Length: 356
Image (cartoon, rainbow, N blue to C red; front, side, top):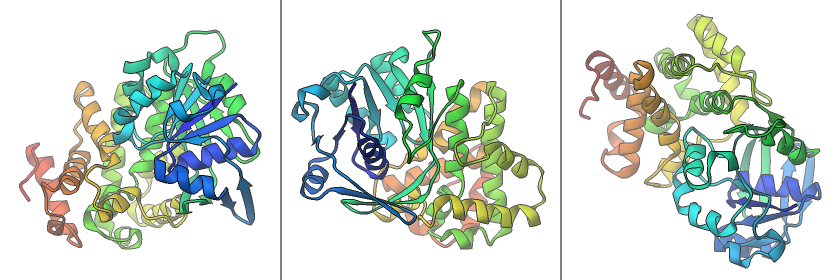
């Protein structure tokens, strides 16, 4: 058996490191600079009081440079950002894995991979651990979660995802099988939506966002729009490793704001483990693309077929995309919550985005 992890970011390193530490035959595909750094010094994964030194002997920038044992591997695990999936596909074709597992955030990556490799070869996955890369060779797991895995298409009596869930389980990572990949992926989308686009667009820390009832109400509306799309599409939220998503949905639907707001502060702060939201990091680093297309954009794309109105997700997605691409000047929204709230109110009333 052979496993190749594609992507040398925090998630890819964590997955490859945990598998290697458990004695699994694993190789890592990463950018040349990351390969050079990891060859010079071993990876170290910090989880609470425990520090795991991990040797990754098989690291390369391309499939051709991997040892022959990792050519045509049993499994390729994709850990790149959603907007990098298209660029990775040629390397995956060169690698020629028997199956491909996506551990990417958002909705739509698996379908993109299935279009290239066939749905029967693609597995969907989620990661609920919160991890930070503090140095090229240093990872810190700030909140332990786990991995969820599901089949895109069932072809055998024993689901392949269930078999891989058992194979990928390690002492440091629990892996759970899910029978419905859409319910699993959309439940993770709900978690990723919270305190992500709003603080990024407004350039505000989480504490300031969740101090304001009107911004918490905005977050609640975006979340419930996504839940409505899920329900009308025929699947329901499910609990994920370390996260009782169904309870969170109930809280969003049922609790009054004075009770909901402090609860969300605890959920969001604890879930991120002190990390800055990923979309906020992307804008601060000047990146022209974000994973917003696979989160809020996915909700917007799925809404028309089920006749759902999603004005909050529409504005969050469009505004985030326009700021990242340079179409919209970020200064129009930084530290100005009223501008974002006005744009959402206009969209809810007219069905169209308002000019900034």
